[in-house]
Image (cartoon, rainbow, N blue to C red):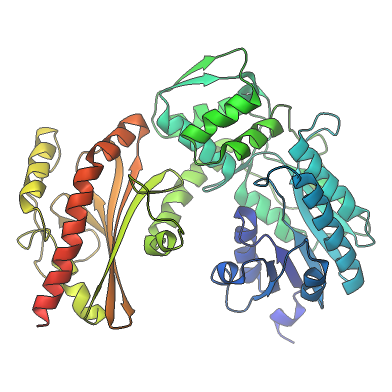
Length: 483
């Protein structure tokens, strides 16, 4: 019998979400037999490994849930309707009831659910609904393990992205009373560790575990710490009244979230969300890290995940055309362009490997030189470094005022070393397509505060002009070389 044969069969809902996506990877690395239930099979299938089975379905459709639960040992319920409008509580109630009854009929041995911390008598409508879901699952005949967490800190999490956007964009912030309410933040890695450990813990009857890091902290504390770690000086001005509605509108303007989600998030933190029952520390081996370390890891992981990201995949998934100023992903601004060339990927990539130095940038060379002069006047490196080799690149090479961050067949990523109010990258990716190759050119900018945003939008018309010409120049160089 192999180790894989001894692992339970797990059904995961919410695999396309923030926590669910992380949990799916952890489950697969452990070797469990993983199944996922998703409304959009294609969207989830490319996020999980090849061994995972993805079922088309919805928790609001009991028959589809029952079909996915056949042969399942442990079922994870990571679904909630925070992004929904009116009627979300009824949808949560129906989804939980369908899931619980289907699990009982299918003979599932355990349900695991992630809900929210908070005292029952002092809950927002959103948190009340999440705790009601837990109650519905626990009242089923299937033993249910419900985790309750407060703020989850990690790169890409809703709370972290809100804090990051506010700190980076606003040198002066008005702070209503709710930003000082205490919570008990927990790192996403620790949440996933608890969820994985739920496979093995003894559970004769349903149980609630409150989980959190060792520190009690407010959103204001988190913003102070994030500003400190990023070397930003920020002024926080207290205001006596700012309603959740107005706060939600304000967040919708400055943070990467809808105003409706912002209001629900604020509603959820108007009261303290702290751990009162510490039995999770007794029954599990997980030892959560503090919020200082959680923020540090979130910032580091953000860069690591970014370095592994194919931005062409991200932008191609956007249904709408990029709006003026580029597409925003979290705190970054992305301008992605594509062009097909009638050549093999190897032939199409050759002009890209020669970019910069004596070859130049394939368009607007005079503008590039002016940018280099401006950079030198500001104390930067300018365009004087050129290239080490006119034909070949290796990681770490200087290319004018760029640095090669990654190069492999079909992919080149350059990191800017000119003086800019933020961080910038320029990426080229070549992939095969019918009739030749697709050349994808992506400019990425991570703005530092309002100065960074002003820089991006002020130069956007010029960047639009230059980047479009550069892509045409690369395509023309490929055609000429193969004529």
